[in-house]
Length: 511
Image (tube, rainbow, N blue to C red; front, side, top):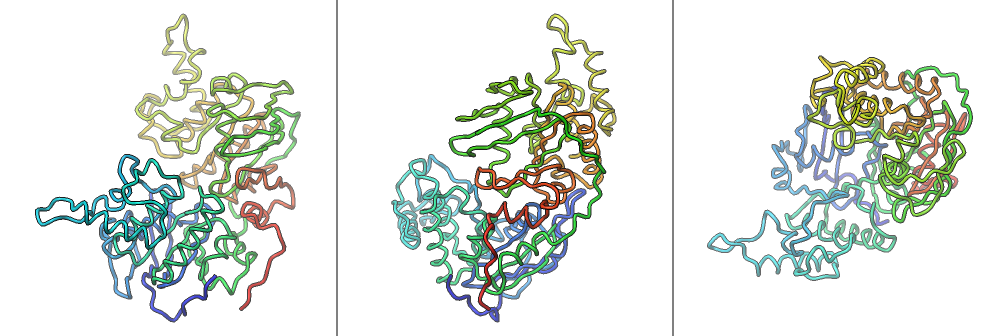
């Protein structure tokens, strides 16, 4: 890592006391962030810490409810992304939007191509400028190459060239190495050093500690939407950084449970997927809540979708009550007693536009129909049974599910799958985006389900929830199981260390 420019410099960008609130959620609470020319600042925090919201405020997508943004010490206000871009702030996201049917130069200058005197796009000048940008970052392709012919790493280079085409002073890199090979990551590191040498201020967001300690000059830590610390990377070690990230007690109130798991219900042996995960194996017992924890890109949701039959494994065995079952579709999973409540309830869980009662009964129409005809009274009765069981708050069962709060939409999705009378329920981020009251209701209901003998798999990125609700926790990293934790070994620090791959003794940094 190159020596950092002295911190006595004036920051290019300063965010001070920034607050952003959404209905029921305070995403940012008085946060601060300084970005210096010629330096990489790592923004660190567990999932849900407020990093993505900060990026959206800084790039003009969101307007803050309070606080001040300064450029070179002068207060500014971004009415939208164009204002942020004009101020020299650009972002390279993990999934930057590019267009396969356009050439490289067209992607780089889309929306701000150079114009001729007549107002037409000056194609020759566009390719000339694009070629200069590609040469600046060492891209191994020309401006006429169609984007569809490039690999992921080279598409990242196009995204970086696009960012630099607006004369950026601040470059935000959000999980830039998530889909890159080791060689491509090394090339990205070299590019970051080039940008630093040009005086760019870089905000680097990553869950990978080896990356942070490799290229960052400074760090800023957020926790639960609040600023908790900043400093020079050379003056902190991995252990201290982890402590800043998770340094709170598990202070939420979770239902008390007397854990008495029964016999094995589900056994997974050697489950693998060609690109997402490998060699996943575990046993789930009756009445148990098994937590799955991991950072972005760990492969948790991808594995759960394969277990539910949305995608197929390349190899592996699934046993239910001791018998081998082949699950090649969601219908086969439901038929074998496995149901899945997805993380994105709006797109994958609830059917927006349909009333509540039809959402709840959708997978169970065989129970409410005769000779191919749905019996409305039976459909309403089934929906009412599970709506009452989850304490669903709605004006009527024929209300559009899209008009419900996030917490009540989640209850509808859970009710839908409980109506199929499963043995195993997979809850993927069950309380994401819902208010604290609804979270407590979901937690109480999960405990009730386990007490009634249902086996629960809970995927969660919230450490208090993982520790407070799980009997055991499986930690995933890079598509593999990194650890299985329970009892006294289940602490915030051990979760984050295994998820981030920090297994060796902590190393001390030179002051």
